[in-house]
Length: 95
Image (cartoon, rainbow, N blue to C red; front, side, top):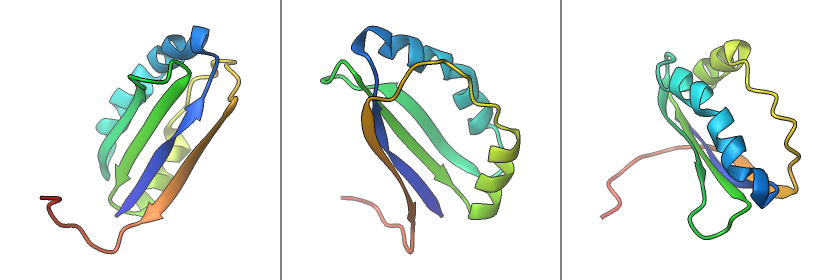
């Protein structure tokens, strides 16, 4: 399993526009083969932060999705952030 997680910083005046522009992409990704979860969401505390979270069955399913994803071109500049891909070796309940 792969997890992509982190955040990007955008102009607070355009954050909600950025999130809304990705709604179709999120919906399509969630129905893609090998997608376990995807979320691109506005942070409830930082007005310029957009949180990103994805879980994929494998690198192959992620690559297949990326080949057809067609991410929106918002023209909204990233002002910072940190998004990383994690290889997961195991899974267990958190509590």
